[in-house]
Length: 380
Image (cartoon, rainbow, N blue to C red):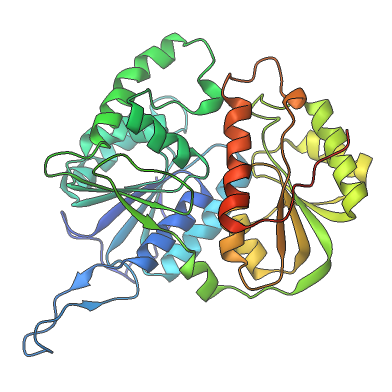
């Protein structure tokens, strides 16, 4: 475990005070910062103040961000950059190699147990994460907040409402392995902990069109922190294309995807391709060679990269979180976000039964909510 907080600049949170956030991706950490910026805790006024009215601080203090580090290098690099931003906001950042070899999860659970047992408020970024599901029983917090982990938020609220298993949509159609069955106990316990009831308060902080179950509080993420810290961007007279990891997750056929990207680049005059952090290098090399697109590997979540700029006047995106977040981040800049529909013929034989319904729902709701321009439908 590596503590990326510089020793001596901020005190460690007192046991039972402050908030602890469990994050595994750059986007989750971004949304924790948005949550901290949007709703800092009320601090009692000093004795003799203005009638005892609570005042507000600019960030949650203290906030401990626990990074459960992923394995892929791109995600790790973006997380380290986000950790720097979190420290700038006054947070303590603790880095754990929970996937680091045999026993990594057990070592992490033992190390975190004292903190999780005493904390009053827990913030999590991915309720589907097996790491989070294993750690959740250690926490007795009466206040739980779930921040966005992309489109997974829409699945999460739907599953809580209907009482299903906490399993991502692209895995729901697969045969359960012995490991899946073993972790199913933790998934069931996590679902119960994340269902509002009794003295436990559960909140959703989201930019997605999610409908929480009865009893769950909902607060909208409008990316106030991002908009206050970055941009507005310089707008280029060109088109940018945002990639997707649907090939890597086994949902979209790689040959069809390559043909679609080439068609979109040609018809829309796209110059740059912003790669998803989980896209494979060999796939990106092929796209660059066959399309002439400049492949950009963002060093931060795309919301921050687009807000920082420069950004094309038109941004094309396949169904993903950014068709909901970029309209908020880039509002007022004159940049058009255009969603590309996934044709059923692009899906692999192994794609789950909900794949097309879920993906089309992402783009349709984005067009309705954010008044996006008509779809950029490929001709292949």
